[in-house]
Amino acid sequence: MSTSEQAAIGKLNTNTASNGTLFKLVIFSLSLGIVPLTSYYGSLHYLWNGNSTFAAITAVVAANIVLIAYIILSILEDKQSSISPTRISAQAPESKKER
Image (cartoon, rainbow, N blue to C red; front, side):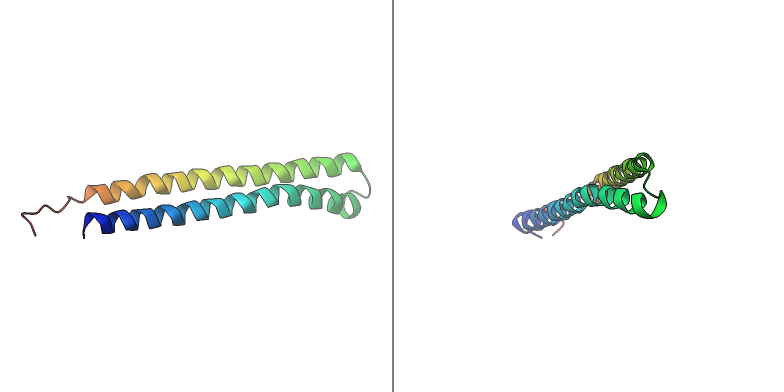
């Protein structure tokens, strides 16, 4: 495989990874706005029977769950990205003599 082909594949992988990261960021950003609001109003009317203090605590817990999920997913994604290059670099590059 030539150097230009390897560069093209690397660029394609980088673009795909950044699109996946952007998609996750958008999903978690929307979740951070929607989940606490729906949990507040849902728990206010159906769980706590109008007690706004408990409904607010429910919304805060829901927001923290979304944030913790984002942090865990980011850490797992970072570990996967740091493992992948070591597997690729562990293979010895092909020299001109070996061809």
